[in-house]
Structure formats: C-alpha cells, structure tokens
Image (cartoon, rainbow, N blue to C red):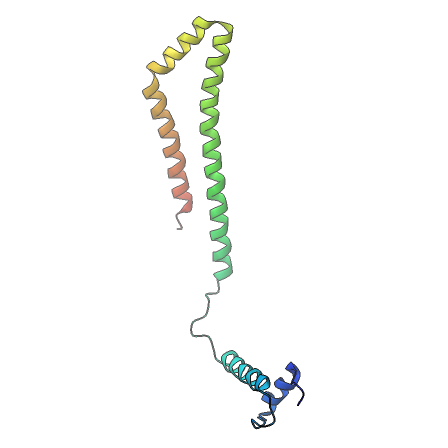
Length: 137
C-alpha cells in the first residue's frame, strides 16, 4: 500500500474515517496516531495563558539588562579615566620636573583616604542611581 501524505492524514481525521489496521502500514498507523494526538492537544485550551503585557514585560526586562551592562561599562570607564588621569599627571610632572612629580605623588599618597572616599562615593552614587531607576513604581 502507498504511504499516506500529510493531506490524506488530515482528510482522514477531519472526516472521522479511521481505516482498519489491515489497510494501514506500520508507519501510517504511527503517523495517524501522531496526528490524532496533535489535534487533540491543539483542540484543548491552555491551562493558564500569558498576561496581555507579556511582550512588553520581556522587552522591558531585556532593555533593563542592556541598560545595566551599559551603566556598568560607563562606571568602569569613568573609574579607569580617573586612575589614568592621575597616572598621566604624575608621569607628565615627572618628565617636566622630577621634584614636581615627587611632590604630586606625595600629595596623592597623603590624601589617599580622601581619594578613596571620593571613588567609593562616586561608585555608591551610581549604584544608588541604578537602584532607583530599576525600582518600578
């Protein structure tokens, strides 16, 4: 017997005609059973549907992740610019006048706690800003 194609299987199920096991090959019986299971599953209503705002929620979450990565990148760039700026200032002062470079380095070392507090404060400010933006009202 020739194998049934998808259209023939669909027609058999739509008409409610189920040929006996003698006329169908083993593959056709498996296909027919798979089609019956598929149509039974498609005919049932979903148990719990997605909320109407599902697509907007997914888009918002993805945008938040992108924004968070962008903010983290900005924070790291700002911190590295600060460190590179101090290093560049020391390097230029050392090239121009070694005494000036030593004075700058001594000033940075003597005010290391102030610089540390400024860096921590800057990072804390950016972190708090991100938390406030992330909060949904």
